[in-house]
Length: 173
Image (tube, rainbow, N blue to C red):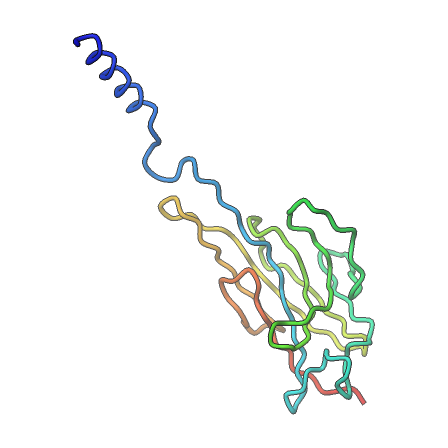
């Protein structure tokens, strides 16, 4: 009986020494990729990215320039089944509410970005500029995304990896 008690005590001590540490030492965090969604709204509230709207921008050769590289709308790089943040450039999507939007992304959500600039060229010689910053701040072992997005110098979104930025424009003639 003494041997069984000694063996149980040794196993309990071994498990005690090998137990997980307090905190999140073994925790693995995934960070959502950053995607910036843009809607284009006319003076009367019309969706200027909807191909059926009069004065739409949907058929114009919209471009986004980021870090010296220009991305043409709806020209996507090859896809992979491996999930990584892949910079796909700028492409058209339809939101759950039925509106059309342009998406720029994906950018790695765990990277740090300081005052990065995306220049949107609308195909009618007009331009908008988006500046964003993003970093992960760790407090007591927990991450928090600190993000800000500005459209033409005005803050339009904070602390989200997927902001929806509504840009106001006049319909084309």
